[in-house]
Length: 561
Image (tube, rainbow, N blue to C red; front, side, top):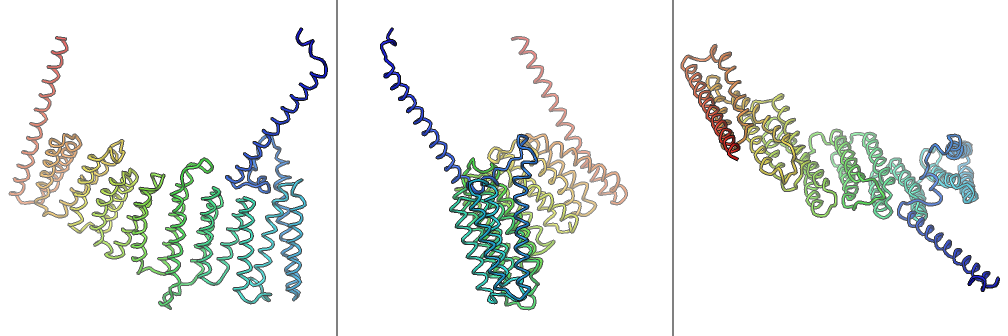
């Protein structure tokens, strides 16, 4: 009845008001979506021009033919167009008309950029590929002004290089303005190619350092981790080829400091990439990205350092590794306090300790350096406790095993080293057992490895360090020591080691001593063996009786309950 009171005019006003509200809500939702897209562009480094490249997904909903036609043919067409322009430039240049070839090349580049602008709204991906290859064509034209030309239009190398770097600088500016990660990656690529092509070694190093700094800056600001990873891999490859290409000239001219500067350059680049360890976690890049960057940086730097040392400093590399060790250990301490990634300090500390090992080897050589390397292993374990690093502890254990195997295979004749290995193994096992919670060690694997080293290294040390007639007796004494430790520390592992040592002593007694040693020492060995065996037997009988008594007492108590 109330609805009948409204006339048609009132209803029209209500409907008009509802239409207005719906239109306003739609506008607000549209503005919110556009704002979100703009923020994503700034965060992810994607622009309208290169979104088609970044977000290529060959899903089942998109037919293969459509993907091939839109993306594949766009790239193929632009590649063929680039070669056509390059051949056209070559034709006029071979005809002795370098100025005309330059003009033709510039006109071609302008035409490609114009096509990019023309297809900007209708064919986004094709427009992007035209824009990308426009910069490539310009780079090629400016490169051929001086490099790879029999009749260069610009004979001065410095001027030609400045032109190329100006173009790359413009491309960097364009990439940042358009938030295009792909354009930035192309600029990194062209910059590193320029560094490699240039004949001046200082220019190569400066461009490498500048490119690394820009890549790190863009990663920090825009999360452009793909461009930074490309810069890291390509920079490593270019540096490696540069090292292999340059002849070993230091032998002829010792005053030449080129390769000393190369060491500084490689170290500085690696240190700059290492700053990624301070980057806080972000959902816009993969979870394991920082770890991958650090491992890739360390691997690349190790290869470059190895090639540099083998080619140019085969006998004078110690200062390099001392510098690396000081930097890595100091940097690991800084990372421990300020890096959000717990594994970063351990990685750099390990690298620093390995550098110290190489420096020790270069100073004292084998086998004299083995003692210091064994003692360093114990020092590393102490520092691992301070770092609270399970990684350092595990790697140090394997390095000690490899070092011991290498020592026994190559030398094994130094008594100081022979007895240092079991001492370090025993102390390390005790420290790990004492600090296993601090080191976050859940199993006994690492400790068992040290006990394994202790058992065999002590057998070897006494075998090599004592006269043959005392070997069996010494092994029996060691078995007694193991057994005493099992009682004091209440640890069954030392009892097993005592039994194993006793078994080895028995084999040596019957197979070796009966045939080689004098009757007096045979008597001594048999007496000691008998005493140790009887004492251990008494201990086991007493222990078993105590267990039976305890079990009977518990049974009686349970029955009373």
